[in-house]
Length: 439
Image (cartoon, rainbow, N blue to C red):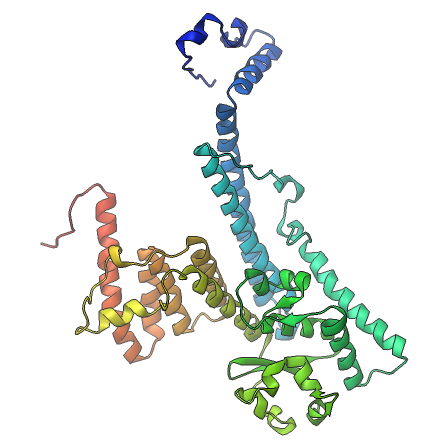
């Protein structure tokens, strides 16, 4: 039984705020109804106390709920990219919707934590309503007002619009005509457009791009691929310089470069980069297109995740202009540069939520590319910026085993100093004062 003592100001003692029976000790032999009346009266008179009880329950239940859904979303992402025997059977859309679900669950939990902090500080804010009862699985989780299956159905609807456009024209299924219909529906009727500079997170998540019609080039390419797959048309892609280009799998690529109405089909599908003389894509022809290395679905998902890492890192380090993930490595490696040591005091402060989102995207990308030493180095450096020194040492030590010799030599002194920082943190956490000294 919860026993709580209340402080009541002296003037109020003459007129007790509650009837005496509200404070009677609960007796198991008495009617349960009396206990409920007493509890209701006490908590309603002290709303902050009532809120604190509810917050304690909500904090525990919400934390467990979101933790479970974070893990489930990650497991479903891993299953989608790992359990198909053929790469072509991987659903790009479903994998990226699981990415969005995991990130949304993380941000939703953070919003709840922020609101609870404000209530603890007695700041007048509205506490987010507990809508978790409305969905009990990642598949039912609302992303921008729709579930994952409903966003998949949105892609089906776009494909049906293309089919309707072909029927209305009373034409066959020639490759060029199908592409023209897809372009009409996506870029004219639905108004999809590429965002040249990513300044908003909604341009980096598939469901947000489907909702707003504006997004990164890679996500619009993925939408194009998914719509055409539903029409029985295989779209392939390849990275060319800084751009990712897509085109239909065909033995006659010259058709894609024929200019009609001022633009070629290849340019309409891939945007302005194809016609920009500064871009490597502007030099492509039907012949050179056949020589490009075709990206797998794993590769395409990896490009989308890499974009997420860059976006969230840029936001996390906004107050530290020009900060690079590898900046601390160069300072430690160069003995002539002062200071050439690292400690907790000179670790830059970054936006914690965006840093965590970058780390989460990096974790997913490492599932796809576990032997990518540069990726693992960057992941370890993000853990360092997040002050998770033990995990950073582990990741960077693994990285050194895969990295070229010259890169391992740069990493080695940093990892040694980082290991000492980890030991010092453990030393101080045990209650010891002063620096750790080695006899």
